[in-house]
Length: 466
Image 1 (tube, one colour):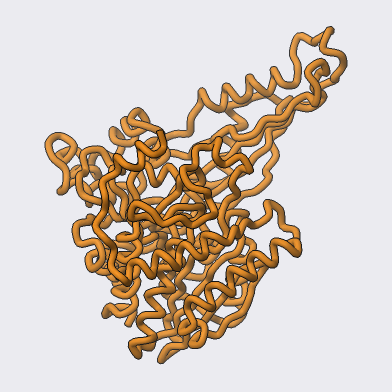
Image 2: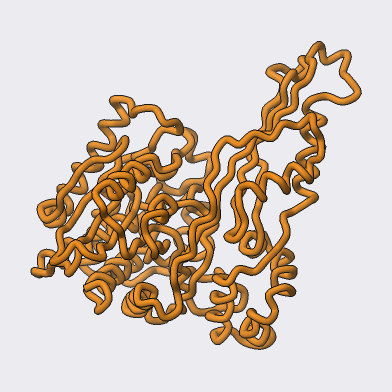
């Protein structure tokens, strides 16, 4: 079955020598399983050795960049680098992260066609964990800098590189790096991190690729709902058990979704896409400003992805109860992962959930929280124009629009010291590839890697940042 799926895929054209080199470089770092621990503890000797190997590989692959840059390690495994420019005024920060999410030991049962850390190059793609999130973006950024430096280019302004080592685990390395920048008086004028992509099949009726650039990102709130019980033997259950009370509370959470609203960024996205659509969809979205209310109410009916664009979401992710099948639970716990819409707050989110649950027996505890990120400028702002022009140079058939990023990135930590923070990986991703992020069969097209290098070259040498 696996061979049939692979042979059915259309054979891509042979990649150029440059594209093959980029693919080999990405495969090299994919083979180093840089998995950060899921707690703030120090790295073990084995973990430290893995991240040290990854840093060494980057130095070997990009000697020009490391020779030109002042480099220091931040946090457990992050890298903070400065490529000096002609001036330190209005510096730029380009970001990516080195760490990846773990893979189950029984990865074959999860459905991987290639071993996740083998860095297999096949069918015009590089396969493996991190190819899209986020080593692909890391590599194309470094490739672009290495090429430009070899050609004698030097930046007009300081270029800072921030490569987190634990983005998948709350980004402590990035937090420390931002504190260092702030301490040194560095005020980034432009920041670009991972986020959107050149997405195909991402919008109903849109046949051209959509370069979606995050101008903000949702806030994050992790909550625990806890109910205490008396426990005892399962042969004598009470009328209302701790898990039963918790289950009722969870039902209320799902039955009472957050109110909908259409943010300005979403309006701009819809109106940017509208000219590339046909029929009723084009007519409706071209009037998104005037149809905010109706659109916000209709979108949740069209799927979870569109629903998440117009409201705060609360996902039930973890459940705990009794430790044995014949023992009543003395404590039942559920974890909620909330993504807070831009324009809302942590306090409003907690208040909504407490009102929906309306049960004093259910304790609502905040585990982690961060407010939605400030909205970065779009429209006629020169920094947004620089991004649009760079997309045009590397993906001329794509339509570039802003959006609110629903996942979290290290960029949220930088936003407090920078007025313009964007989230975009210059890699092409279809629906299947987007679904493979944090899942099985993560892969990136070799041709897209080469275009990603072209994107960063155009960005760094364009009239705005040059």
